[in-house]
Length: 376
Image (cartoon, rainbow, N blue to C red):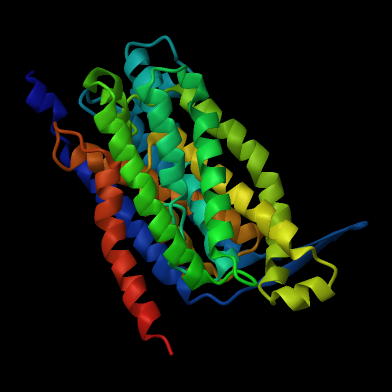
């Protein structure tokens, strides 16, 4: 069998991929008409308010994640029967297809899910904090700041283990710079977006300078990484993302409740005993951390953090602990679906996943911009 024949996607694979995407659209359309259905759960001193609509949405997203994960295990340049791909991934790890499944495809799928979770969560926190649907870490320069430090580490040939730390430092410094430059008796979303766009352009020119300054042999890996690709994703990348999510998600959950108070206005939040600037700084750090670790692993991927939180907010309403989890799940679903499309669209040629996210996110960004400008 020729390589071209092996690489061509089967009709079943394409059908499952199309059905999965249509299922996402149907899920969004169906749940958009559902009304919130909060329920109070009490057990002794523990009390919790649960929105059953959010639970249904999370359940639907989880089912789609499982389907796309199984699809990701069986599709690729070397087709593997569905049952053998599943058995090799989960129990028969010494089987015939062990290397292809467990060393190439499974870590790629898991990395896509975790990176999508991080990017979408970061975008949700930024958009809610600044009450602006145009704000996301890739638009205002957070991702570019992380990318600048990461490219520098790759260009000088430093230890790759420093990549997440360098990206996090770049994201935090960039966020702090934007915050200080946008501060004028408080922060407004429009001012921060404008400052962020300017910082983003400045940092992008810095990346270009590094790419030109260092020899091509040293910056080749950086150029490949900058395209935003899941090619070569490993279990080490997945572990990095898991550790970051485990460290950032608990404080994010705590800060979401305080974020609701900040949305009432600084004066009202202060009168309720909230230290507004401290909480705002903590939210920016957590959101920047989510973006930084994703950028460190898969590159400066655009539009995931912009597109997903906006869609989830239209369907599920304002940000809460439940909608934050839902946003992360939809982000994971979106990025994995984009990666599968990137692998199969022009098979045997595999596109960087950043090409697909940009193709989908760019028009949607223009739609949001036009809608935002027409609002009274």
